[in-house]
Length: 456
Image 1: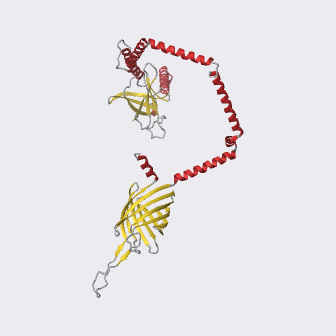
Image 2: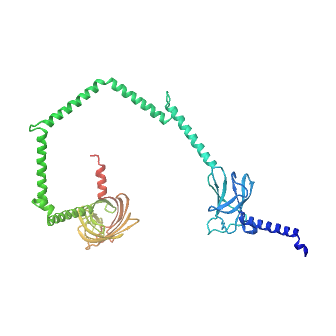
């Protein structure tokens, strides 16, 4: 084993040891995490990779976490391949931002790992989100655009303030208008110097007259007027003092709580009475019905007073062509003593004025009513269909002969309606007749509209 003691072996062993130490130290201080398999690869595309250098640092939150492994051209864009430490949690929402390190144009890649709730980014996958971090080139571009705008403004200002001026720009039109206005003012003052002098003289006369009024010591002077005004204010102060003390009717009204409450109660009662009157709805009903069997028209003029939504009162005057019980005339049509007793009956109807007075109670679409129906006691019901446009009515009155009447009313437009039905449906008084008619139902609002549209 003498070769172990040889100087050559010792020198070679020293070289190997020192080289190993240098390699280990290089791996420790290097930013490249690809040594010993402790890395994760990714890549992204940039429109311009100017300022980026291969093997330069990749940072996250300002801390070096990897290096740029390669810069190549792909589909007309710069492909940047990076390697980062495996403990950097890159996800699918990871993003890249190229930041400038100074004003000399050096740049570095800043990586943002992304949301920790997103799936992890696969190894050697593309990072799709690339942000524009701004650079000296962008700044110079913006400065160039600002400079161009300033040059345009300066050009417009020069055109507007030139000797001839221009009306192509707002500033030029303003300058021209000011020039025209000052010229007109100068011409006006030159042409009306005498009138301006007269105006100054008039102002001087007014001030002189005002000075004389101020120095006038007569009863019509300003001092006497001021004295009377002071006395009036003093009297007003005495009146308000009496009111505050509760003296006089106005004082009691202001100071006495009982009097004030009485007046307030009276006003509230009057206001309630007026509100109740305003809430009462009044309507007028005009209707005509043609009785088929009688061959005449039956007319109605009615007033409906509705103090509330659940009830109303109805009063009407009725002109009934079949109002009086008919008279019967008998006529023998045969001759001779042995001829049969053959008679024909002729009905004669006589008009009669009748009165109707009803009280009605509303229950949703059903209305119950009772009172005086055409000079006889009676009652009836109304039922509404189709959003209250169609109404079915059944009435019974004159219980000596039991007159039962039914009808259907259909509203066409704004109170105009059609009616049809049967009078004396059971023919107890032998006045049974079908009828057809029309009517007009005018409410408060309709009357107000007619009055406002009247030509007078």
